[in-house]
Amino acid sequence: MKTRQFMVSGVCFCGALYGQMLEMPVPIVAGHPFSADEVTPRQLSSNLNSAVPETSRVYRDSAGRIRIDTPTPSKPGAVSTPRVFITDTVAGFKYVLNPDTKTARRSSTTALAPPNTDDPWKVERWGFSVPGVVETSPSLEPLATQLIGRLTVEGRRITNNIPKTEHSEAQDDVNEVWYSPELQMMVLRQVHHTNLGESTTRLENIDRSEPAPLLFQVPPEYTIEDWPPKRN
Image 1 (cartoon, rainbow, N blue to C red):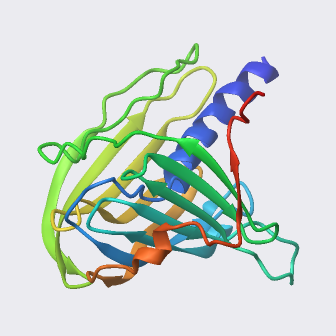
Image 2 (image 1 turned 180 degrees about the vertical axis):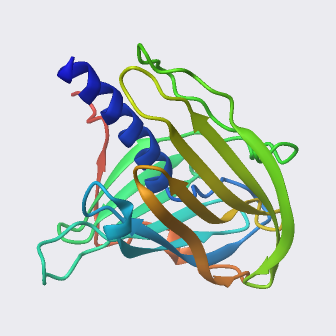
């Protein structure tokens, strides 16, 4: 019984945490360049109220290429070296740059379709189920438009009420997400979860100008390593 309770609570915890810590993915969309700071809570314990803000720098150019500079975990007091992720849909490659080793891991990619702008509020479902957990359908509630970083954004409140079962208590998962048609992505996400508390992920310092082309290229001093490795 204890094992099953742990599995159920663990899945609920990981599911909610995964949804919160995915931040706000940057869609591959041409013609909507920008750069911004994405601030999100980094988990320190089982309660999001004890999380600390973590800032990543995100870029997208007019061709739809994406760069994300994100901090890597480090020991307390140590300087965190950022990892760099580049998705070059023009050349057809993804790169993970390691500034410490001056290496770039390269893998093939294909240009992804732009997001479904007719339904930006589509709620993705998990690809698994847990015995004893009732699957529910989230409800969507429109919110008034507002300005965020000089962008007019549309809001929705997504509520998922998880009923009590023999293995877990009732839980409420409420997401307020704000979508920018100009950027074609979410720019603010506020989450309340019965067990995990409150968290907010947001874009700050939004700049609509074209990022420098060099940001989406591997520096010449880096060694490129194909992944998976090529066989001789």
